[in-house]
Length: 415
Image 1: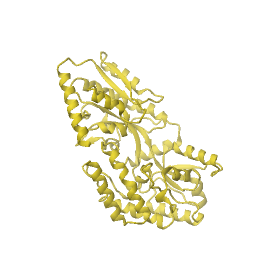
Image 2: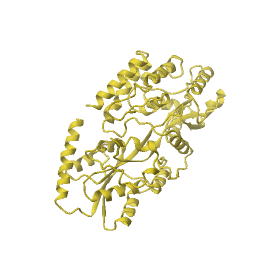
Image 3: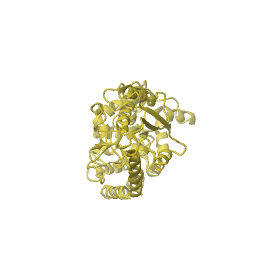
Image 4: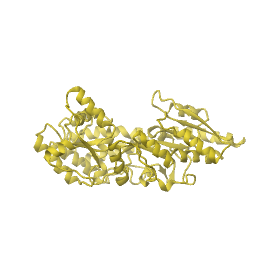
């Protein structure tokens, strides 16, 4: 399937480039984008572009989100009329972040030095920058501060794994199995980013050597699984974690039964409100977001921008449009919707204290790379939870488990 998609791209893109060479380059670019929020960065970028190139028209189209797929983009590509700029959720744009389609942006974008280095790393293929990440929602470890006060423990931004284990033991001693140190689940792939954020705590990386194969086994993955089994054996997580889904675990946190776990800022009120309505929580508890222990990098979900390479002057206009979509002003305005900029010259304008806290985590600790920007991501994502179930059921050793997980990833990558 991967090879077929690449072959189709080569044929379609080659035909498009050939056709463009026969005629004068039109003074226009086309932009396909997903639905916009309160700040219209498409309109903003259009105005900025036309200050530089007054005679260039920008034709915009909103993608059909009816089934959550790349329906509109695929149709445009099949018709031989791919947009010059595509702006959408990274889980969709990643399909087109390939050399056969995307314009390398290093020589076009004038302000790359303003981006956090970790924000751009995963958008490079063979050293070439094939896309730009928009601001996104980052997770951190949401800590129930009411529980912390009850057990007499004070977490910190730079806490270590041994501090977390000390906290876990205090929770166990105080609540005797009625509350747990952290949440864990493995019923399906949903919410896997919460669990995956433990791997960087142990230095484990999925793609330390690029995207040809996974390095999760040789960079500390077994230590992560060893830690998970320790959590289970010591009663620091619920006994039925292997069969629990993400929503069930989130509700445990919302009900005040989990001391600390990976969470997104926008989820806190949602799950506390749900717990109150269900009668499992009386009043909201105090929450503060800290990094995962050991200065671990964190997960962020965002949209991305990919520019189609045509070999014409349109590439210059399209790349400049992409630059403006994502410049300091645009990212600052987008942050009002509680997303986090990935540029150090952008302002954080969200009024949410939780978002501010997770923004600090991103700035200080950087971003983890689970392959979200790669065309193969949808194939590798389902490979973890079956292995994790075995780990939590203590059916395999950490070494056996990480070897299986790595093998499954490599096989899925090369399908």
